[in-house]
Length: 378
Ligand SMILES: Nc1ncnc2c1ncn2[C@@H]1O[C@H](COP(=O)(O)OP(=O)(O)OP(=O)(O)O)[C@@H](O)[C@H]1O
Image 1: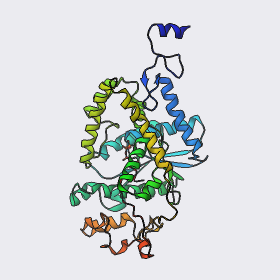
Image 2 (image 1 turned 60 degrees about the vertical axis):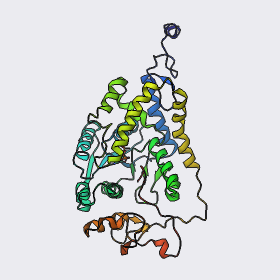
Image 3 (image 1 turned 135 degrees about the vertical axis):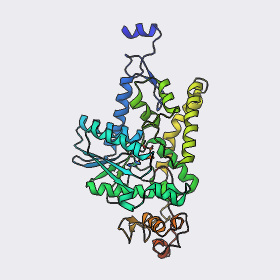
Image 4 (image 1 turned 90 degrees about the horizontal axis):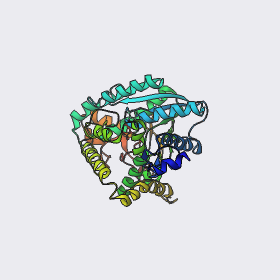
């Protein structure tokens, strides 16, 4: 009766509970729903992903890769909430890697320190300076802005594993979301990187490595991760917050990623435009919404032919980290830096460093070489 009255008054009701006033159009399904139902479906879907993929076992020690950005901040909050609500029995930790990027990581680490207190989770911070003797600031001073992301990505991947080993955890979780995964599928297709294409949609990776990594946000849309903490604030101030680039976990973009920063600004600008034009371009937006899940599904359905030779997994002769080469990529890059020849380890031709010969080449086979690329370098 009450609902009927509301409907007559022209109030759009939430299509899930059919009781409360709808206050947002859900980016993933385009349903008009209320705030309470948004929180419920957002958390329920992540819980379903965790359970159906058996991401954790009771008693697991789990490190949350905490960059201080929006994805890992929301992940830390949601995972600790679900852990309590559904009694997963997990011991959660925050693990942060300090790359030594002044004006970027030092700011975002403040958020992680705040999260440590807010969520009551132990925090471990590991720096490139301690692990490698180099900060990204110093690396960029030596090599400039070109290729610096290769150093950062390779070092971070290994640093997360080393931090996880120090914390003696069973698993590492990262905040990679559906948009990141769809983007990586497309990048790997464009680059013809079959090795990465075959594993980039896996929700658990590195099962052959000492510590597996999981992505509970694999099917969670970035837009919903952004809405989740800020939903209470109405959309307009939220857009202003983004566009004016007021420092916030939503907006941490690495200062060394100039191209990405430009892309990010353009992306935000186009988001604003599309928000204003959304009623006109409804059909286009609906296609865009489904494209993310479709791309992930295509990546999942990708099958590698049995005759394709994949890189052979071994350990680095220098540091003992997993590697398909004699030396792992981090050791090759570090060696180049320490010798004052930082470009040696970059690109495909790696013959110039003795320790870097491909095991498969040595074995006479032709392997698929996997480069450091894409959003998912974990
Ligand atoms: N410095 C870091 N320390 C710990 N974990 C990290 C770090 N950088 C990235 N990660 C992990 O990898 C995930 C993806 O990182 P990426 O650099 O793509 O950032 P992002 O998509 O902006 O995510 P976020 O918003 O959490 O920073 C993060 O969500 C986080 O779990």
